[in-house]
Length: 356
Image 1 (cartoon, one colour):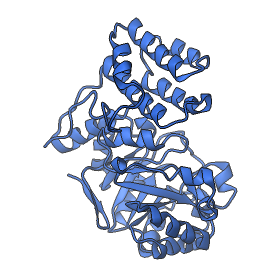
Image 2 (cartoon, rainbow, N blue to C red; image 1 turned 90 degrees about the vertical axis):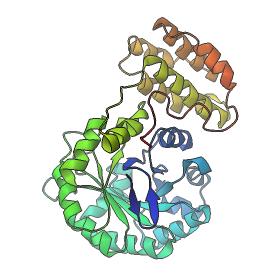
Image 3 (cartoon, rainbow, N blue to C red; image 1 turned 30 degrees about the vertical axis):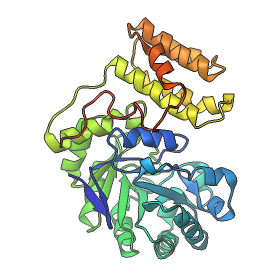
């Protein structure tokens, strides 16, 4: 029971959000193999793509196993966004997404992201230019509005449909709300009622039950999970099973959490230069995967002292042993860094798959 974006058919209604500083190739692959029907790159500067900036282009790297995948662009110049979309097409993504919702000051200060919710004429020109330049569906991600006094998601969604955009994701908070307070799902419902194209709901989905409730309460076509997937990629398969079969799968065990953490770690390590700098982003994931477990606070304090990938793995193995989870050192050795297929050991650890 999936949905379609243009001619792109997706096998479920659960989608991974583009998360700046998090949605790298390894994390996307973990989520795809655990039930996400669609993933996105991190937000990428259209200007950086157009100029061929090395760091920007690295953010566009993806594996075939991650498909279907969208590339998310942000920018404020229609010509630059169109040029970036054309260059991205050389990578053959499944879709291109336009970021009209980022609340970060450095993005808003460049008249991009959610700043465009205050300049609908420019937003329209950017969307139209991207649609004209791309040979795949173009989607957009917006917020409810600039602030609570200027909520305009239904108007913006209808305008984007008129520009030829194939689907819109609505984060049910304003730019002023950033990531605080309660998301107003009524905004998603009003946006959905204003258009015929798919609307993807986003905001406050932390458990499978939240995803089901959002679908029922708003009538949206799919649910995008962002922060709810951090350390919790099982949410996609668990929510999918609940939506499609009415069954709430149990949460992963401690062993399943730690084994997937180590598998994720091996995937990242195997694709890195194994430098200390390459280790830093993985420390965040260790904290997320172990959140709520006994001794997790002490583990997080120890993360700053890790000076190598071996140190980090040993820390996790010892943490597991303290919780009575044996054999994690053998699990690490069986990987030997990154072994064989990039999905080895990553799929459906901690839950059954979706119903047949």
